[in-house]
Length: 416
Ligand SMILES: [Zn+2]
Ligand SMILES: [Zn+2]
Image (cartoon, rainbow, N blue to C red; front, side, top):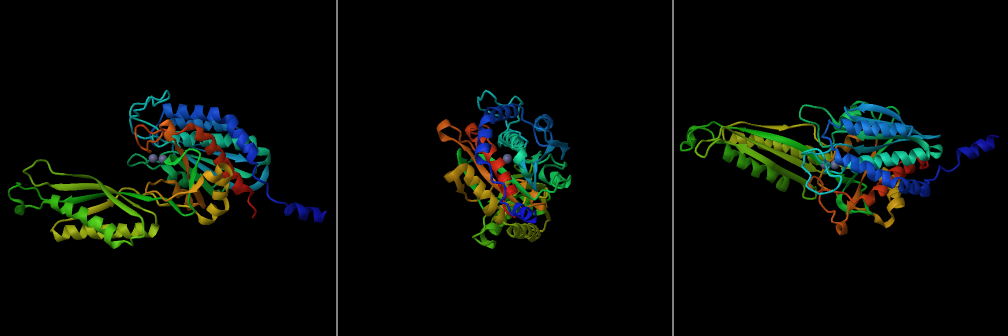
């Protein structure tokens, strides 16, 4: 009897049921497309995803999952407990849309004026609901627990509101049961349909939104010496900020600093009273990010002082950390799982300078994030995310379902 127990304990972990996952994903593929189109037609802005959240909660309940709703305002947490004991894994999808007017003529185009699923979060939501259905159908063999995280406000909560991944974490979405690893993804034109892009290190950048106010003293444009003209001071600041990224940071480190908005003055012959500038900072490394931020403060203060005025630099929120995959999780689980689904179509990609709030989940557990290819030039689907003609090749949706289900299973079943 003791021998039998010992043998049982040493038995190999439950293998990933690739064929069953594939068959289930293909069976529900039309339903996944229907859900994606329904979401696409009724997009909702960040922290306003009422209808989307309700739809997700209802569908998870119909699959027999435990559901917590609402979480982080309009988000949903679904818990699927497998019949076999094992660890806990989290799978995440973001659910919000963008303030963009859709210009395509798709039959399921946005019915909400000025709002559009231009980042593909409709596809993310439909895919994760599909993965929940696939894994629920295999629950009898599932060796552990899967926590489905449907997160609002990835694109940024309205000013003054909390939201997104940080609020999901704050409200304990990963705490009960305690999630041991999180997997997430993004659709887009970076990779072709049929492929998945991975990295075992950085894959997306950090992003910090900032505002600079330069104080001036308004006088007649003919007598600038009697006031303080903030326009040339702001111009010097723009140049000096570019010198930080080009001259003061190691050239091997990716970084971008963009001033996207500059505003000041009222009339051609009046010295402006103040100048406001806004911009974004992107890096792939937490230390580089911190270094540039502190040098920006020094530069803004120094340039202002040199011209006898003051200026303030303010980062408007806590910003997104860079998305840096846990190397061990990537090599041990993430990349092997993607190879099971995509074969040679799983390709290593260069990190992008776009950003995402997914790494906040990393405060609680290691994570792996990948790119699901949805570009298809032959079908004319090539617009980039955040444009009025963005679309995804729906033939990639079942691959996304398989990828998320396989990642979860691969993590739960790995020997430990
Ligand atoms: Zn986006
Ligand atoms: Zn997005």
